[in-house]
Image 1 (spheres, rainbow, N blue to C red):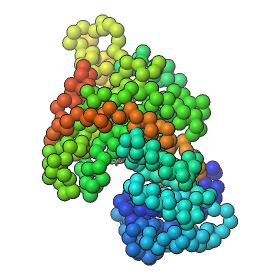
Image 2: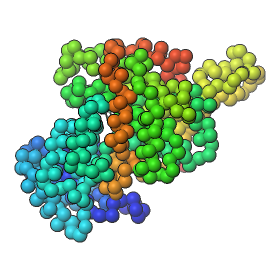
Image 3: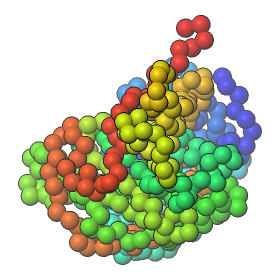
Length: 488
Ligand code: BG6
């Protein structure tokens, strides 16, 4: 097994109370992630206590976990590893109450021996999360503990403030880890490395050189079984006010004084403070045809399954640079890109018809897939007579490095960080409340939803929104195929 470098994992063994243990996220990401972290030796010891409304016993929970690993785990669970992990699992149904939960945690702590820490993962909607917080309080499980919360962190400013107040009645802010899994993605963290570990790009990372920015996250998937959640949420609350704005902050922030949680949050919050309120005129809301006929959806639903918008960061670095954001369900392609368009040269000496400008300005593009890619595209001369220009590119693909197996899935990374008490990649109450504040004009007067065909790129008006620019997706040219392995 690979040797884990010292300091990447928590110092003390962990007791995880997983609330919502039988739910979708738990089965898809959290149980497979905890399995990998334990098996790979990232955690010095771990017991997991599943909690949910389902009336299971420990063996029933083990069976559910095994099934989840087989169905959703990206790494094979061998018999010996599984047997060890299964022995670390326990289960307490919510109906058993606080005392039973407290007793299960005490048992787990005794079995680990020595000094331990508690981590409560609340993988449930906000109302259930607040009852879970009260239950943890009653069970005496607040001391020596950290709590990971899942979005949505409110649905508007007032509800976010009230949620934070209720949380703070039990847990202090430094115990709370609000997860935004986009920040746990390797390529999101690589934005920081790319910007601040190199001298080349930072000097031009501003309004003098950058014309506009696109953060584009189209998805091909539909709602699956999430219609109830989605009807109460919509694309803006599900994706923009969360993931897309967080990525925007990494892209736009000033250099922090150090790579520590407080300096990073400070710089991200300054970006959010500089954001202008979202003007409903700069927003296209869409809904795919057929959405209203889906099970669990109101036949007159006005919920958007697509959103594209223009926003602005009114500070010295970014004043006047439009940021275009887009995301939606049932679109033509699944992609997660940030594309930065540089300003075109002030004057072209290349003859009309030479091709310069024909494929848009030079661009830097980040692909935020786990197998991250980056591309810098620019004009160069096409070989042959005369001066014809072609778009060429320099590309980096993580797939070519042989290190792709070391990538931690976003939830794995973030759970490990929370166990270590590291807030760097988590969002703060202040940041979230500010994002709801800039969202208020849109939430109060949303433009009407426009229909789009499943498999398209959204309603037609998205083109007016970016004009005179154009959406970078769909790419005119595909990414270069990964290099063949040496000798391959
Ligand atoms: C979730 C949203 O937070 O992120 C989903 O609720 C969305 O609607 C998902 O599909 C996208 O995440 P990823 O990691 O698959 O890009």
